Image (tube, rainbow, N blue to C red):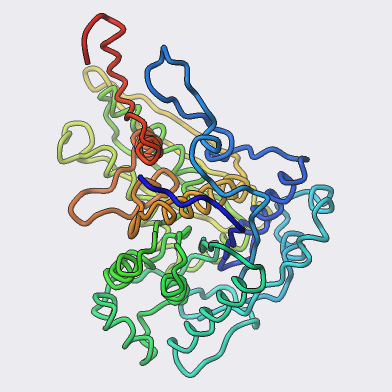
Length: 436
């Protein structure tokens, strides 16, 4: 596969300059200064096996595939609040002040552009730093001009957009989403079914910029934008960063299924106090998140294939806004399982995690891998990046893959294919004198 080299600067556009974005930006800046390491980043810290185990080839992924160098990254963001990246990070209260002070001057230079914002889609916050236009098409044109200005001003070779904004209210597909013609007509006519995130995605794709959706709402997973991405030769992926509780579900559920242990019920609740928690306190936004968080177990367990084990499993998800928690999210899971002869057992998990600390390396990996996809000529939905998402986009002809270990194998095999290496099957027959 021919891959264009990662020459020049890569611009990362971030709709939303809140806890996740500022934690990501500060982290990359600290890593570039050599005062922190990229913990949690697969692209930066993980190796990839090449060939047989006896060949002992295990390069770092960043040394194996041509990724953009962290020193070549420039940042820009949109946000409905005027705070610069440093001010926003201080208010988010994710990172200690001593860690922010090391990169304060650089972060203060990142001032958000006015956002496309609509309280009909995010009801529990109300910023004033927003764009105005006669219709949504004009708002999209303003975003496109922002992208062009950023590209020219920083002399960028390439760009990527990663949505790090708030979760919008749940919305079902409508006729306006079916074709690019109906979608652009909806932009001109201010359709109530076109959300701000869709406007960001449209503007990015029209400018040839890959788009990754880090939230659970409907955005690029509509026929109109999927069609546009393919026609423009642009990579898209989503949706909803797989961080805390769902990450553990996609680790534990495949293990239970592998051992044919049944599940009677899985109760999950979250306590979260940051801006994301406030937004999710609205039932409409919570509905988007609930669907995303609940989808994984059904596809992993495949109750239609294993009705005795999973057909009647009860799955409940709750998110509770609790301001004192801030970004230090707490996830509780109670899992009622059964084994031999139907005897019951329980698993209880209390995950005291940090939401933005888990999300920041995902933003980095997605930005670098989406840029890689674009340079490799991989247009449209990048299912190989399902590893990073709660509700991964996929071809309509197949079911989405949620098993973290299968997703991980898919990611690494895609990288191997890009570089002309053999897939790893783990058969290992040659070690037993059998030809593979």
